[in-house]
Image 1: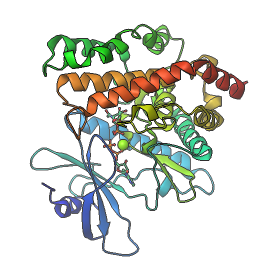
Image 2: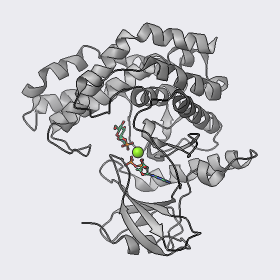
Image 3: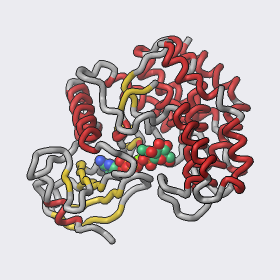
Amino acid sequence: MTPDLKRIFGCFAAEASFLSGYSFGPGHIHDTYRITTEEKDCDDYILQRLNGNVFKDIPGLQENMERVTAHLRKKISAQPERNVKRECLTLMPSRETGKSFFTDDDGSYWRMFIFISDHRSYERVDSYSRAFEGGRIIGQFQAMLADMPGEPLHETIPDFHNIVRRLETFHRVIEKDPAGRVSSARNEIEEIIRREEEMKTIIRLGEEGTIPLRITHNDTKFNNILFDADDRALLIIDLDTVMPGYIHYDFGDAIRTATNRANEDSEDISSVSMDIEIYKAYAEGYLKAARETLTSTEVEYLPFAPKLLTYIMATRFLTDYIDGDNYYKIKYPLHNLQRNKVQITLLKDMEAKYGKMVQIIKNIAK
Ligand code: ADP
Ligand code: GN1
Ligand code: MG
């Protein structure tokens, strides 16, 4: 049932009047609605009911988001010819409390952003200039947050990209087999297990202090980048998981989604493969914006990052399938298993192209 969007919209301090509200966008996590307004010269809005199953501390999450957007806004405003309203998310305050969220009678949390009008977003990328732009905007995002002052951000999902923890959960769920699905996923389970040690590399480097913990986005799926009508990247949205992390998480997840010639849940496995030229264009954009803030070891391990993030998603989709589909929204019973198969196929293609991936980074960074 659609909630009373007009009433909830009225709880935020927007000047405009509600005209209509409808479900919007490709997100897997929150319930997202676009709100149109009556007045011609007023903004539209994005209203979101936040997923309290996935995010256990929403006030903490919103505090992160307020700090991060304030810092980005300051940086962007200090540069000439930038449009801060289109290059940074604007959270609307609640009329009652002035906070950046509102709690409904049933305990649901809501928040509202100004809608970034006339934007484009892409599930996959087939243009080098779009890939370059995507890389540039994520490199710039990390570089702008490199000097954010204050306490470390809240860890909105603890151990989000910690593959050691993800694998522990994976084995626990297999052991329990709550939905009786283990026997239908033997090959897929094996593909995860045989790569376990290799995939602990980044966590190990971090724990040894060889690479620094920074502020990273952690969900740089390409459709979280919004472009303008001329295909210039405006910003990266979906800031729920901005928290301490390794830069490889952002580089890897963007490459995982941008370079795949098929969708994340494609039913045609034969169409899944990595476009190495898109990888190259993305890496050029990313390093142009971020190179100065990175250490040589961080750069050295960039080519490994797409393999890691593809593996993490393969593990998470498979874990959710075996667990009985409690995390990701699914459209049919085998959806999570199919998502896992796409990731494993993509990972194998990345493994085959790994030598080239390494060489490309060496050439750009030299
Ligand atoms: P989820 O975590 O569920 O993916 P997102 O925060 O990414 O949620 O939002 C879902 C979708 O809503 C996005 O993919 C995008 O299409 C749209 N969206 C979110 N915020 C804005 C905004 N400020 N302006 C325009 N569209 C937005
Ligand atoms: C989720 O929120 P969304 O749809 O951009 C997930 C990501 C996964 C992605 C896979 C908080 O991203 O980690 O990569 O699905 N976000 C969360 O499609 O779990
Ligand atoms: Mg999203």
